[in-house]
Amino acid sequence: GGDAHQASATILVDNAAPAGRRPRAAVQPPRLLMPWEPLAFMFDLQLAPYFAIGGLSFAVMFTTLTVSPIFLAKPPYSLNASEIGLTYIPIGICMLAGSFFGGTLSDASYAR
Image (cartoon, rainbow, N blue to C red):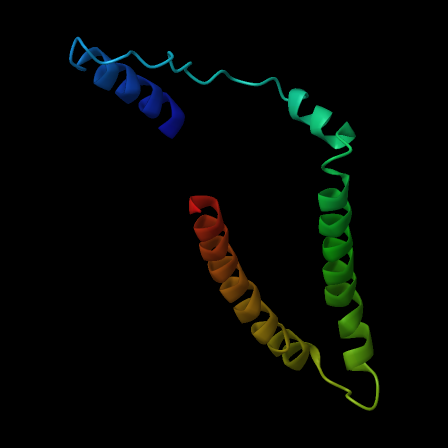
Protein backbone atom coordinates (compact mmCIF):
# COMPACT_ATOMS: atom_id res chain seq x y z
CA GLY A 1 0.00 0.00 0.00
CA GLY A 2 1.02 3.53 0.81
CA ASP A 3 4.04 2.63 2.97
CA ALA A 4 5.74 0.70 0.19
CA HIS A 5 5.12 3.60 -2.19
CA GLN A 6 6.53 6.06 0.35
CA ALA A 7 9.67 3.95 0.82
CA SER A 8 10.29 3.69 -2.93
CA ALA A 9 9.49 7.39 -3.49
CA THR A 10 11.94 8.41 -0.74
CA ILE A 11 14.67 6.27 -2.28
CA LEU A 12 14.05 7.88 -5.69
CA VAL A 13 14.20 11.39 -4.17
CA ASP A 14 17.38 10.57 -2.26
CA ASN A 15 19.01 9.17 -5.40
CA ALA A 16 18.12 12.35 -7.31
CA ALA A 17 19.57 14.65 -4.59
CA PRO A 18 22.54 16.90 -5.40
CA ALA A 19 25.97 15.48 -4.59
CA GLY A 20 26.63 17.98 -1.76
CA ARG A 21 23.51 17.04 0.16
CA ARG A 22 23.93 14.80 3.17
CA PRO A 23 22.13 11.47 2.48
CA ARG A 24 19.15 10.51 4.61
CA ALA A 25 19.00 7.28 6.49
CA ALA A 26 17.60 4.52 4.32
CA VAL A 27 13.86 4.01 4.63
CA GLN A 28 13.07 0.41 5.27
CA PRO A 29 10.21 -1.03 3.24
CA PRO A 30 7.34 -2.29 5.41
CA ARG A 31 7.37 -5.89 6.52
CA LEU A 32 4.37 -8.15 6.92
CA LEU A 33 3.60 -8.94 10.57
CA MET A 34 2.56 -12.39 11.65
CA PRO A 35 -1.06 -12.41 12.85
CA TRP A 36 -0.07 -12.97 16.51
CA GLU A 37 2.60 -10.24 16.73
CA PRO A 38 0.19 -7.33 17.41
CA LEU A 39 -1.14 -9.27 20.43
CA ALA A 40 2.02 -8.17 22.28
CA PHE A 41 0.46 -4.69 22.53
CA MET A 42 -2.15 -6.14 24.91
CA PHE A 43 0.57 -6.54 27.56
CA ASP A 44 2.00 -3.02 27.24
CA LEU A 45 1.03 -1.22 30.46
CA GLN A 46 1.20 2.20 28.77
CA LEU A 47 -1.69 1.15 26.53
CA ALA A 48 -3.82 -0.32 29.35
CA PRO A 49 -5.83 2.90 29.99
CA TYR A 50 -6.73 3.11 26.31
CA PHE A 51 -7.86 -0.51 26.26
CA ALA A 52 -9.91 0.06 29.43
CA ILE A 53 -11.63 3.18 28.08
CA GLY A 54 -12.26 1.58 24.68
CA GLY A 55 -13.56 -1.63 26.25
CA LEU A 56 -15.84 0.23 28.64
CA SER A 57 -17.19 2.43 25.84
CA PHE A 58 -17.90 -0.62 23.69
CA ALA A 59 -19.56 -2.47 26.59
CA VAL A 60 -21.85 0.46 27.40
CA MET A 61 -22.80 1.00 23.75
CA PHE A 62 -23.40 -2.72 23.10
CA THR A 63 -25.45 -3.12 26.28
CA THR A 64 -27.55 -0.04 25.48
CA LEU A 65 -28.26 -1.18 21.93
CA THR A 66 -29.09 -4.70 23.06
CA VAL A 67 -31.23 -3.98 26.13
CA SER A 68 -33.10 -0.85 25.00
CA PRO A 69 -35.53 -2.73 22.66
CA ILE A 70 -36.68 -4.83 25.62
CA PHE A 71 -37.65 -1.72 27.59
CA LEU A 72 -39.10 0.09 24.57
CA ALA A 73 -41.47 -2.81 23.85
CA LYS A 74 -42.98 -2.69 27.35
CA PRO A 75 -45.35 -0.08 28.79
CA PRO A 76 -45.26 2.91 29.02
CA TYR A 77 -43.65 2.99 25.54
CA SER A 78 -45.19 -0.18 23.98
CA LEU A 79 -43.38 0.33 20.65
CA ASN A 80 -43.63 -2.27 17.89
CA ALA A 81 -40.57 -3.61 16.01
CA SER A 82 -40.70 -0.92 13.29
CA GLU A 83 -40.91 1.90 15.82
CA ILE A 84 -38.03 0.44 17.81
CA GLY A 85 -36.02 0.24 14.60
CA LEU A 86 -36.66 3.94 13.97
CA THR A 87 -35.12 4.77 17.34
CA TYR A 88 -31.75 3.61 15.98
CA ILE A 89 -31.66 6.34 13.28
CA PRO A 90 -30.45 9.14 15.61
CA ILE A 91 -27.83 6.80 17.09
CA GLY A 92 -26.57 5.97 13.60
CA ILE A 93 -26.44 9.63 12.58
CA CYS A 94 -24.51 10.54 15.73
CA MET A 95 -22.06 7.67 15.22
CA LEU A 96 -21.47 8.78 11.63
CA ALA A 97 -20.94 12.39 12.69
CA GLY A 98 -18.68 11.30 15.55
CA SER A 99 -16.57 9.23 13.17
CA PHE A 100 -16.18 12.14 10.78
CA PHE A 101 -15.42 14.79 13.39
CA GLY A 102 -13.32 12.42 15.51
CA GLY A 103 -11.21 11.53 12.47
CA THR A 104 -10.85 15.20 11.53
CA LEU A 105 -9.78 16.12 15.08
CA SER A 106 -7.39 13.19 15.21
CA ASP A 107 -5.78 14.23 11.91
CA ALA A 108 -5.47 17.83 13.11
CA SER A 109 -3.93 16.70 16.40
CA TYR A 110 -1.43 14.46 14.59
CA ALA A 111 -0.48 17.29 12.21
CA ARG A 112 0.56 19.51 15.15
